[in-house]
Image (cartoon, rainbow, N blue to C red; front, side, top):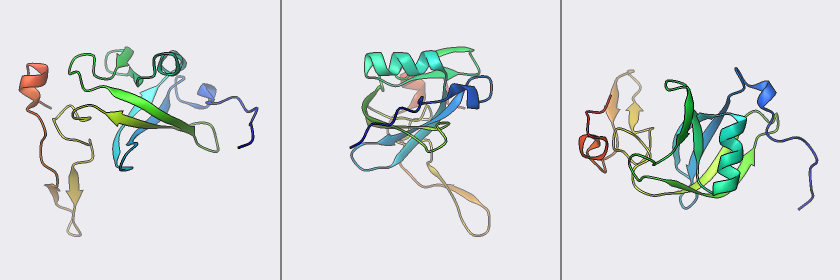
Length: 134
C-alpha cells in the first residue's frame, strides 16, 4: 500500500466545517448510520478508537454510546476521493439506531412509495434512553 500525502479529511470542504460520516458494520458491511463529524470529533475518534460525532441539534460532540452503551469501536477508517466524506468500519455494540434497530436504515420503500419497517427492533428505546423514540 502506498502513502498518500493528501490532507485527509478536508473539513474546509464541509458545511460549517462538518463532513458526513457513514458508519458501516465491519463484519457484514451493513450501513448502520450517517452522522456528522467536525475536526474535533475526527481527532477524538482517532485518539480514542471509538466513534465520536458532532451533534448539530445539541451543538456539541456526541460520543456514540455514551448514554446507551451502544458504542462503535473503529476497525478501519476510509475517506472518499474528494476528502469530504468519512467511512467508519465499526464493531457495533448494541443497536446503532436511537429507535432501537441495528441500523438507522430500517425502513423499506416499495415501488408504490409506501414505507414499511423491514427489520426487528433490538432494544426498547424507552428502556435505553428513558424516553420514547422519535
